[in-house]
Image (cartoon, rainbow, N blue to C red):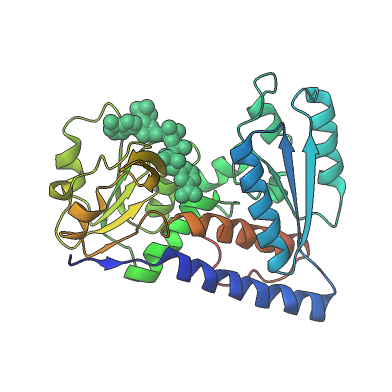
Length: 296
Ligand code: NDP
């Protein structure tokens, strides 16, 4: 194994400690406490786990945390009324509606009802447009976390060939926009891409966000490349359930220069960036300088 293993857990812990420091100063010097409201509709067990860990991380950072749990059959008008209330609540700087929503609710309508300045997931159409036009936006947490890891590893990304495999609205597309913003030459690959292996072999930076266990093989990697594995896939192996990424870790680590593991790579950065976005939203709402190194 030759690649450096990128320790996302340690890096995320460092980001969270820096955020906690900022929050403490905001409280002391400005009397302001950043606050995040998370809305969960229904009882999806995975969503409940995510919401609980987001709330815990928010409190650990010294921020205010509110959890709004609504029954699965909540009418759309009721959910929209809650969002309207949170939009108008000055103590709330970030609003996150946990996805997926039950089928009777229109997720686009709900997300676009959030005040874009409080849209800490960066999914509001205004933030998508701002990011796409290179303006100051709230940036989706997972790609922002990947960007932070890449900048930490490589310094300037200017001129590097970046390949993003996956074109979802929550990971692939915003990731590509962020890499373009950092002056990479960007290719977005997807299920219709011809000769994906050859496309990947061009990459100085390869970001895999596909959702297919260990699809990216070692001989798809350019020697020395930096490989960011966003995938989280549950597989049965040796009678146990294990988490693996979209990248064949053992095979790719022999060729890459640096690589994120799964778990312990990108995953921990997602919550760290949710906290970063909440802090950024709070600073912007109060006309204060944004913390350095926590935004795109
Ligand atoms: P989506 O299912 O929304 O998108 C997957 C993308 O992969 C699509 O664009 C699809 O292409 C592409 N794809 C599928 N099969 C192939 C293939 N054989 N070759 C090339 N491209 C392919 O997934 P997400 O973006 O939401 O998530 C991707 C992965 O990242 C998942 O494993 C998810 O669990 C994980 N994830 C991890 C997070 C974290 O915190 N670490 C956060 C969010 C997601 P097409 O558009 O053509 O169908």
